[in-house]
Image (cartoon, rainbow, N blue to C red; front, side, top):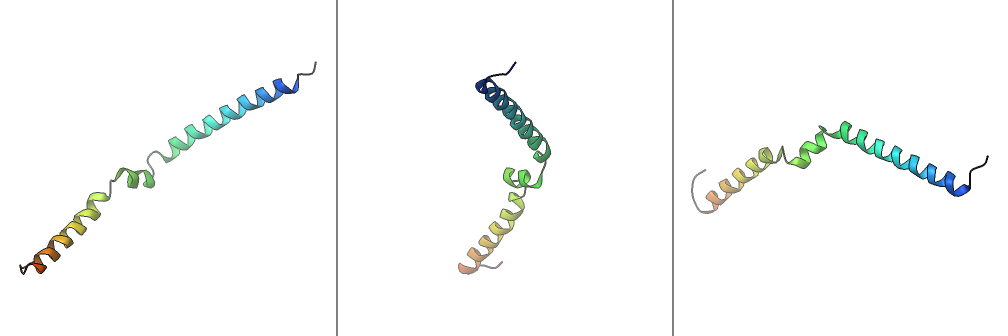
Length: 68
């Protein structure tokens, strides 16, 4: 017995949605501890900002005539 084209299309769409969800879940598992996530979370921000802030403070002191 042949299924109607509409039924076939609906089943195919459901399967594709399941596949897409599985891919999303696996991608999230794989990239969860990745380097880009660490950067996005700002884990390295303090290290860089600290040096920049220190350099700005030193420059400000020099401009005001203070010693570094």
